[in-house]
Length: 94
Image (tube, rainbow, N blue to C red; front, side, top):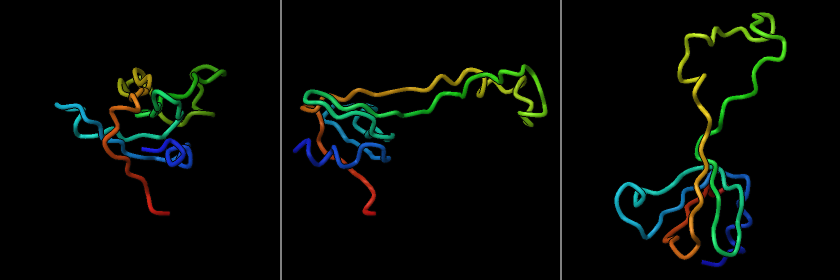
């Protein structure tokens, strides 16, 4: 696959299928962050924003996040995929 085609989609949500088996054979979906000669990087899950600099103020943050484990422990994830393992690349038509 020509890397020039991948460069056009940096910053967009794409799905990349690889030649590997198991769960990784189902593809990786995320925002294409980086395209290099040997691997590409997808952001699969965005991490939580920084803490409120004003403390636990309900003025700036109207959600009660103290009881939300999903919010408190989401650190995000990135996926590096070797270029030679890419089987197909899917993107939106527009």
